[in-house]
Structures are given as structure tokens and as C-alpha cells.
Image: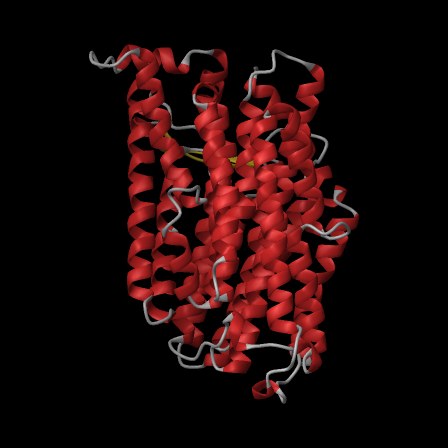
Length: 518
């Protein structure tokens, strides 16, 4: 246990910021923006402090707090982080300031907008630190409220429909998830993720559930798979996994770009976090039973989303489908790790590689996708909202700095060696290929199609003859260059020295893989 409540303070900090923004900045747009950005930087500083104090040689939970909350229901205020939780806190702390800077041009209800962004940050922090399902589910559901209003109130012409679709899809998944865990609680009396994971690893969880919830029309195997399906749906919608993805392109496109950055950079990671923190430890055996269908879904997510991106003309829709594609690689590796290997030491080492790749890809995608959408926001600001592939041409002649920096982010998304996107994808494919050769081989098609549409962006937006309409388009200002510099620099740093991230998560990876016991 930690003597000082670091995680509680971190979670509460954005709430205090939201109150300050509403209280002092509701009538002063400039003050509202600066207050919100200041609180987001405070959260980043506190997260970096946690990173410095974190014991990377241990895979155990750290900075824990555990206090009785609703004893009759087995509900505790239980928070803590391992390497996975720390990584999620760090990427959230990086993505939120990027989203705010990309939202600097917002002019309507500025105080409310930035306070909702801070409230969403609190929900993300709470989700990534809570270890009791009841406590965790509160943050999981509350995150929908600020996200819904950020899309609806400041989005594009079809924002109401997009926000409603987003809410309905995620609510359906959340209800399925809630019902599955309520059934488990009725059988075990436990909500704590750690306790449930230990029951699952000892082989006592599902027998206990089946003994208490014996449905005469279903076999024990069917009951276990039904509970798994409920939990799986909740996370699959959030990532999203095809075919539960149809809410995402509309939400990402209609949302203001700063909000889109939060959706892709942080909220989509809530689903992957659920797969790693909850599904693998608690439902690993059930995942193994349906491994082949899961792998087909991962391959479809990777390949079909890449082809969908190739067919788009709107930059935001291209990057929206590209996000699905990149997160699909994480799902491929997660499912590959479930494969039974009989304790083979070489294949176990490949599982470690694949899982390290997942962790690194989660961080890299958050950074790269957020930066790409940030560039789209800058482009929209200069062109009156235009962002179509056919709206531009030859921009490198008039905005060379913008072209160069966005080109770095695009090549990072492509997975160019030397940039952050390469190492995570390499580890995923290296680890997954010996485990699930057929699925990994098919997934390579996603890499090929990704290269085609990213090079297409470079060709149609930045190369070729200059569209005279943009002959006097201004390049990045000094402030914009300085703002973008840390994100671009981090792409090189992580690409050249991935141990900066892997060194803190490797022991957590080892613990996750060893807990699977097959």
C-alpha cells in the first residue's frame, strides 16, 4: 500500500480543473483555455512523477489503496497500477493536452468544452486505476457523458446522429458487460479483479459460478461462454472490433478534432485495457475455446478497415479507419497469446514478444493518431474546414514545415524503422507468427494497404501541382512548431530507444503471460 494517495490525487486533479474552468473561465475564453491546459500539464507532471517512482523491476501492483466502501456488496475503493496501468495513465496525460491544443480555435461555450475534456480525463484515470468492478464500472460509464456532449454540442452537421449512435453502441456493450459481472458476483460475492483472476487461475471461478447459477437448459461450458460473450461485447465495442465498429467513423468525423484525439488516443484504449486487465486473467480459458473465431475477427479488423481507409476521401475518415486497423494488430497479438502451447519455452518467449508489442503499440498509436488528427485540425483552421484529399495538392511548396512534420507522423503510422510505430508492430508480428501463422500471414495484407493509402495522402495532398487556391497558405507558426515538437521528438525517441517504454512494462507482460498457464 502507498502511504500517500497518489492515484486518488491524480484522478481528482482534472475534476478540480473542470470546476476552476467553469468558475473562473466561463466568461473569459482565453482564461478557460489556459486554466484547462494548465491543469492537464499538472496531471502530466504528476504522472511523470509516478513514472519516476515506479519500480520497473516488479510486475506487482503499486501505489495501491484499498478501503471498504459498500461492505454488504463487497465493494471496495481499490486502486493500483502495474506497468499496464502506468502506461495508460501516461498516454492519457499526453493525449489530453494535445486534444486541448487542437481545440484552441473553439469559440462557443469554451469554458464548458474544456471542463468536459477535463472530466473525461478524470474518467479515463479512474478506469485505468480502479481494481474493483463496481468502482471501475462507474468510471467506465461516466466517460460516456462528457464524450457524448463533446461530440453533440461542438461537432459537425450530423453530430447529433453520430453522438447518439456512439452512446447506444457503447451502452449496449456496457449492459452486456454489467450483466456478466453481476452473474459472477451473485455466484462468488466478489467484485475485485485481483480476487476473480486468482479464482480463475486456480480453476475455481467457473465451477463456482455454474454451481450457483445452474441453468438447466445450458451445459456448464455454455454458461461460461455466455458470461464471456457478455464481457467480450463490452470491450469489443469500445476498441472497436469489426463488426462492432460502425459507430466509430461517424463519431470521429463529426466530433471536433480535439475530441476525436481523445476518442482515438485514449478512449479506444479503454477497450484494449479491458482485454488485458479483465478478459485475459478472468476469461482466458473461454477465449481459448473460441480462439479461431476471435482470430478471424482480428484479421477482419486489420484487413477490412485498411481497405475501408483506402476508399475514403475525407482525411478524418481515413485516419478513423486507420485507427481500427492499428488497434486490430493489438487484438491479433492478444488472441495469439491465448493459444495453448503446452509450456514450450520458445513459444512462451514469443508470447512475451507479442505482448510487449501490444503494450508498445497501444502507446505508439495513441501518440501518432493524436498527432495526425492534430495536423488535420491545423489544416482545417487554415482552410475554413476543408480536409478532403481532392481539396489540396502541392502543399509542400507553400507549407514545407507542416509537410515535413506531418510526413514524419504519417511514416510513423506506416511503421517506418527509426520511428515509434515500427517496433511495436514488429514485436507483434514476430511473436504472433509462430503462434498463429495463418492469421498473422493474412494480417500482413493490412500493412500493404496501409502503405498504399498513406502514400496516397502524401501524393494527393502534398505533392503534384500546387492548387493555386492555396498559394498563400501560411506555414506553421513558431508557437505551433514548438507545440508539435515534443510529440514529433517522442516518435523518434521511442523509435530509437523503445526500452524507454518496454523497460517499465516487461515485468507486467511476464506476469500476464505466466498467469495464463497454458
